[in-house]
Image (tube, rainbow, N blue to C red; front, side, top):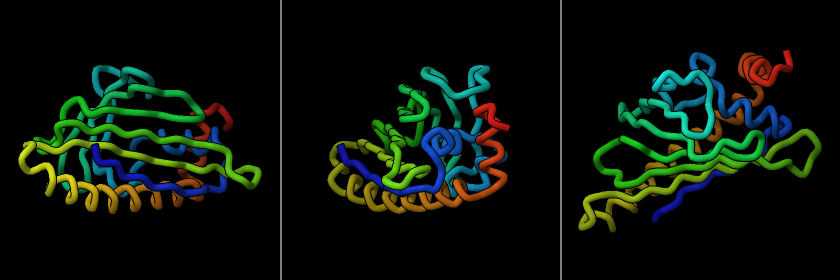
Length: 163
């Protein structure tokens, strides 16, 4: 399966970096250029393993995804439950590790996918790598900006009980 990845170092510790990544609307929309609409489904109010979310991308595509792992402050993983017809499978993982400098975090975001139909896969996978690669780089750059945005950081600290 094709994989796209982006890495950035942000000037906040892992606990706060992870919390920023899990902010929800309307704060999420301040930093995440990919998301146009996102909310929990099935009555969930917080992220966690087994929780599902609805996301509409800036491209207008919708996906329901499920957290398959949720281990603050180190990692989170998701898989597509329902999404665009051309994805047979889609999954992603975000990892957060202490950076070389104290108080920094290395965030590594990785997506994997499989396109359909199978006979178009050789071409569709190359297009997917290009498009998703561009999107993941823009998204992680927005995340890095969010890690320097006072409003985003206040909301993330609040979720940690640090306010």
